[in-house]
Amino acid sequence: MKNFFNRVWGFFRSERFVSILSALLCGVIAVPALPPYGYIFTLFIAFSGLIILLDRAKSAKRAFALGYAFGFGFFSVGLAWVSNALLTEGMGFAALAPLPPIGFGIWGGFFPACVCLVAYKAKEGWRRIAVFAAAWGVSEWVRAWLFTGFPWNLIATVWTPYPEMLQTASVWGAYGLSAFTVFSVSLCSLLYRKNLPEKGSASWMPGAYSKTTACVLALIFGAFALFGVNRLKDNSLLPDDNIRGIKIRLVQPDIPQGQKWNKAQAEEMLMKHVHLSREKGAETLTHVIWPETATQFLLEQDEFARAMAINALKPGAVLITGGLRIEKDKAPLNPSFPFKLYNSILVFDDAGYLLAKYDKSHLVPFGEYAPLRSTLPFMKKFTPGAVDFSSGDGVKTVNMKRQLPVGMLVCYEVIFPAEVVDEDNRPYWLLNVTNDGWYGNSAGPYQHFAAAQMRAVEEGIPLVRAANTGISGVIDAYGVVRASLPLGTKGFLDTGLPRRTPNPTLYARFGNVIPLGLFAVVLLLAFFFPASSKKVSGENV
Image (cartoon, rainbow, N blue to C red; front, side, top):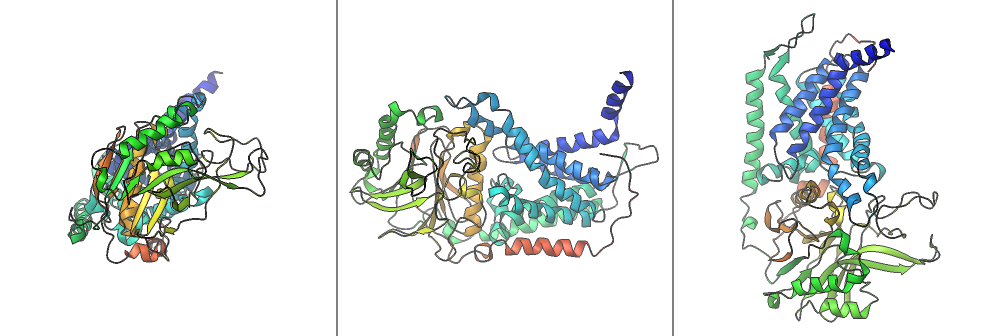
């Protein structure tokens, strides 16, 4: 027994444990750089620290473990707010609240682990940093489609409070901006080089490239800021340069998630939207926009509820609302419910006619459907209702008479780069309706809003966002927030519609070809140089 405790104590005191724990802490330290906190300096500490630990790794196995520890810390803490959904009143899943952060950490850790494994093969110094950054960009791209995809908290979103630094996303998208950011902040690892005498002294000494590195950092950030400043000089950024004849009202009812699906309050919740829609100034509105699943009623079938809803409109206006929609299902999984259920956006005119509809296509696993339910009938989702949502036909531009073509996105469909616009029919504006009430007053809604900013810059198209509990707002084609309603407030926002950029951005034209091509070039060039000579250790991780 004594030997066992000695081994355990020895492990916790070992350099191996300390380095992995340090990598875990580096991942946690990176989180405050994300919205809503914005402490970007923490990225310099986090990524430089990880590179230094990687330089000291004695085996590929250790490098993988360091990356995994970093990713576990970054994703488990950065996505801890997801647990709020399980704490919603009446859900009955409070006991499971610790599981999402742990699950995201276990899942997310593999991406930085693979990045570190690739970077370990490169020569130490700027080559390794370049490989690390390019591999990080590739890992974010993979994260966007693997297992249906979840590209949340891309590193690029740390720049959303600073529109000048966002503008390069119009060229290489969020993945390119993420890689550039990771490369830049990781260069700080060259400012100091570890002095490792035979006995493993922990002393530090200035690196030979300190001045050069500092100058390179200043030039990089200066050049990117200058590019952004010049791009923001475009005339379409003027506050009064909106599309003429359009006045939009965004309704933010701020209905707590615990009340939203209470059948006894269904009519009350609907009227809450109507009253906000008819407040002062409604006479000049052309569009009234409600958030995702604004009402429990099936507005296509329920004439009484539809009549109540269009009471929100003045003559000539249209109502765009998130809502549930059903269609007859020829082969239902549940015979007691022979319909397909959609999470949709519905457009009604002032007479109650359905002008257009859009069905959400990128559904949330376990939130809107239970994966593999047809094979594993016991699988269930964590949200109310026994019926899974069906997927729509995909991204499309909705065209209506006397209306500008609009690209519609429901909830987290907005987080996927290069997947928000119909390339063959470019819309004049994007609409994102969402219900972030699941997550309360947490970081989640801010991070969701930041993703919407990124899509606007990438595509050069303004984005209008209506959210149940916030954040509702209007983002112009350059990612600048023109107006918004704070999280957790009830109200409405009257706004114009900014213009899209005169021409599609480079990213809108070529998509991920540009960033992925750059990553491939960096990786190929870096590996033309010989790998650093390392004495491979046989110790286990």
